[in-house]
Every structure is written in structure tokens, then in C-alpha cells.
Length: 540
Image 1 (tube, helix red, strand yellow):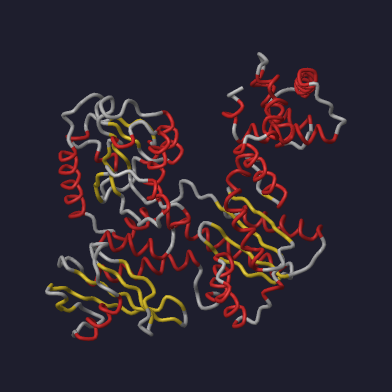
Image 2 (cartoon, one colour; image 1 turned 90 degrees about the horizontal axis):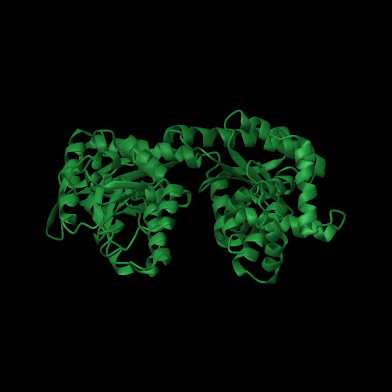
């Protein structure tokens, strides 16, 4: 069995520690323990490495009074794959563990653990020893590399779920350098262990050529005065592309069974990316457009005989797979891609579709009436509902240039979490929803006159004794139920007369005129800003 955060809390040195937040992550696998005592905002602008499930020990001594920087470090640790963080010397160097840290840890499902408060006799070295000892004993019994890596990979933020991250986890788990290379001996991806190792792909290819290593066993070789073992295993991951996985082992633990497990992991995740012979170029076209690689985009579109200017609609599908096993998530992504393709073919639409980071992206080349678009999306939603109930679809017509498609994607990526927070439960998001959410976030962030007006519109309601009920009614009425009294009452489980009474009271308190189009727009914008950032209105 793999060592988890919960297991670590049973160790002598952590037995008296308190879990302050992030209990959902207590099952996170712990593969390492590390110490953080250098705090630098420049870390956040770097392309961070993927951590192999570190239990991180820190006192935040260098930034004891900067709670915002502490919170950002917590988010950073979670984003690079740490398993949990343990805070030392609360009440000594750190005056308190700020509520913002607790809120962030709970939101991320990232365990925030505190050593006994006011104690100077809790030492890093004790936890380092206990955890490393427990990891060693757990690994002596742990044989399931595949499930271990899949579990670690599934914890990464969606934008980190890629081939380099996967190889990094494999490399760290097996404590060896791993190279994925094609038959032309091109360096597809290299992950080194230790990370500071200066071996290159060219070195690995040369060492292989100089040894009697075969596809069934490794071979001993020498490099820079050190004895190594080198392994190679060829495999076909796509119908027409052959690859080889190379491994450099300095510790003497690697076996051919490990090599077969690495290949199986690559095959599992190739299904997630849907990179088979039939659509590898399509998948590359999607990434080239969204990555802004104009040269690659032109080359691939030429090979596919696609007029890139004919792409006039983008569809971004964002599935939510909370609580599902990693392999189940992979299967569902692939099946959802297949359903979108089938639906598009039935509606006679030319479509390029595949996964990109956490999304399923479709580029559509067609012209049709709005009613047909609506029916097409209704059919797609029905098919997808049979696989997964929790997802959103964002439909963006009229992007008739690849450069515009990328800009739309960047706007979407930045704004869709805000739109979902503003319109919870909504599945279909349009240009209007995305732009409105972006405008409201900008308005709240800049706190200029437009925000002051929105805040003043709601100020009388916030000061009323029934403010909670009135504001809930108003936000549901405008944002969720399209100003329909009956459906608002149904959503809030009250009689429609209650809604009518509350709306009448709101009009009286705010002097708000429902027959004024501009006033209606301002009220809509005000409640949207309130739903996004209620804490800003609490400052009144």
C-alpha cells in the first residue's frame, strides 16, 4: 500500500499535529518529504517542476506577517503536486494561521496541518526521519507503479496534465532518468533523475549504441566515471508511429517489468489525448491553434487539406469528474469525444475534435441557421448526459480566423470559472455570458465609478433586517430564472406571493424602476458583481 497523508499523521513525530483544513486530501499519496524556508514571489513566474507527492514542512518564518504571500505559496505547493503542508512554530515565529490559508486549503482539498502551538521542541529532523522511514517500508511492499502514478497524475491541476509531467512522475517514482524518443532518435521528452543530472538525450542514444543492451534486458555501461544500467523498450503507441522508452538506472533497482509498466502508462494516457493514427494530426492542429503556433498550424492544415480560414465556430466542453477513479476519467473523456464526433456527423457538420488540457475542444466548419445550432447543441447535450451529468459547453460562432480562435480560448480560460460562479447550474455558456462575467470581474477589481454605482444600488438592501432573503431572491430572479417569478419561487421553495412581496419591498427600498431598461441593466450588473464578490459589498 502507498503511504498517505493520513498514514503520516499516525507517525510518532506527527501524532499531536492538527489538521486545520483540506481533509478531503488526507488520502493523497506521500512519496517525499521536503522543507520550504525560501520564500520568493519570483517562484510564481517560473515554469515549476512537478513534485512527486511531497509532504512539505515550513514555518513561514521569512513571511510571517504577509498572509497573502503565505496563501500564494500554499496554492503554488498544491499546483506542483505536493501532498500536504505542515506548519511549524505557530505562536512563535508565526503569530497565527490566517483564516485565508484555511479557506484556500479547504477549497483546494489540500491538507493544512499544524504542529502543536507554541512548542519549540518540535523538530524538522524528526518528521523527516519518520516519514522517509515509512516511505521506505511502504515502497518495499508497493508493486503497483501504474495505479500510484495515475493517482498522482490525477491530482495535478488540469494545465499540468501533460506528457512531461507524466514522465516526471514516472522518473521520480522509479528513481531513474526516462527518455521517450521516436525511431528517428529525436528527443520527444526527457525526464532526469535527479533533476540536476546533466545527462542529455544524445548521451543516452550514444550509450545505448555502445552497449549490448537488448529489448529484453538492460546492460551495464559507464558515463562520467559512474556505472549505470541502460534499458530500452520499443513500442507502437499509434498505428503508424513507433517509439522507444529509454531508462538510465544508477541505483540498481530497475527491472524490465518496470519498463513494461512505463509503456502501459504511456498507452493509458495516449487514450486520454486520443492520439491514434486516425486523428493525431487533427489533435496537433487543435494544439497548434490554441498554442498560437502559426507555422505548425499552416503545415498541419496543409497535410489535412483544410482551409484554416473555414473554421468559424469553436466549442469548448469542460467536464467535471470529481470523485471518479483516474482510469474511469480517461475512459469517459474518450467516449465524450466519440459522441461529439458522432453527433456532428449526424448533423452534417465538418468537425475537428479532441482533448486539450482539461477541455474537449471542437472546431466546426459550417454555416447554418441559429435554430439549427440550438437543435444541434440540444442533441449533443442529450448524448453527453448519458455519459456524464456534470459539464459545461461554451459555443463561440463567428471566429473565422485561427488567431481569433486563440484569443477567444484565452478569454474563455480566464473567465469560465467566473461565469460558472455567476451562473451556477448553467450548462451552456455563450459569448455574452463570458464577456459579461469578464466585465463584472474587471469592474470589481478596479473599483472605479461603475463598481461604486453597483454597490450603492444594493446598499439599502444590505442594511435591511431581511437583507439575506432579499439579496438571495434578487440574484436568483435575475441571474438564474430570467426574471420569472414562478420559477424563482420554485427554486427557493417558497410561494410565488412571497417572491412578489420581496420584489415589491426591493423596489421600495432601492427606488428601483422595473420599466426602465437602463435601470434593469444596472440592477442585473449589481447582483452579478455581488454574487462574484460578496465580500466587497460587505465593506459598505
